[in-house]
Length: 123
Image (cartoon, rainbow, N blue to C red; front, side):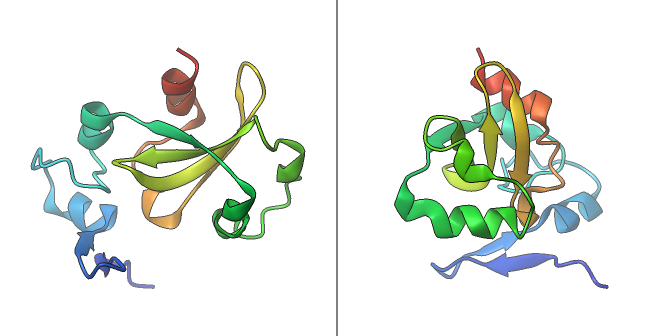
């Protein structure tokens, strides 16, 4: 299967994937949305956003059929994870740790781990 190198946003912008950027061999320090070298995360950090009932279709899309009772975490223990104001994934947490982390496909190769998310969220 050939890896996707770029995609178009709904606004018509071309976005390079982490696979494309990794094949370049070095980081260009442009804070690319899917930077596989960690530069964008270091520069912009991760942000978090509450999930509302209107967001349930996006939650289901991100979970992609995973067998987890995510509604038991809602509302206060489920958060979207954002990178450069784009939803990268979601976390299901308790009061001290991330219990489950789900990332959208284009954000899965950027080093976003439970430990990284916890370091930004639980500070």
